Length: 335
Image (cartoon, rainbow, N blue to C red; front, side):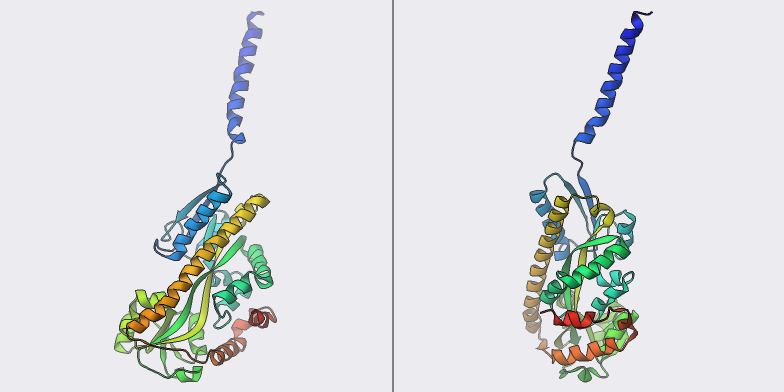
């Protein structure tokens, strides 16, 4: 027994050592960081295609380090629920709106107001400069997410069922302008000088056809896809809301990355944003010609008059009370 026991002990220890070694082997292999992306975008939308650009960029710059999983059509999380999911650590990445952010970061509501952002170039300069740094820091602190890049969603324009000489907001007096039903949207319609009329999006076409409403506002791609050009005669390029959304990542994931990974991921997100922005801006420019071909009269009002009037309406409202002092002036000064 005494002779056998040492042999048994050696075999037992050897087996345990092998088992321990095999158990620890995976720790030496590099584990990919999963990046599940939730987006309501449909496959043909530039906002959907841009995620593939980000994925391809990461495969070039950080091969084997990230597992990018793109979930379209709000198939993973319902639109608007992504920020809470990222804060909980249940979702890695999404693109979120200024309206979503403003619910938890009231200072951000300035970007839901009319005529704050002038155009896509102005948007990029504001968010990629000191103003963006300050506000994105608040987003990180209050929402537990990090914004990697702003992306251009579209510019809202006015679409009227009858020809009208529109130069200033006063020229929209009495115009029943369809707006989404929330108080924020209705305030914007009123600030534009019109009579805001809440109506479900699915009822807008018939409303324009029958005269229930006199006009509607949307980015040009929506005017085309919803065929509003069939029931309107005029497109007025007010540029009243330059809308952006933001590529964002959960702080839980962001803080776990190395400095090199953060740099490469942010660069990939910016490459995706650039791809989206270029294609969307090109689309909008071409759509003006398309809508002219459909018989619409295209006009441009006095944008300075609109901007001054609308900003004044906001500054004299409760909305501006949560804006940091001097922020609007700083945004206006960005050239």
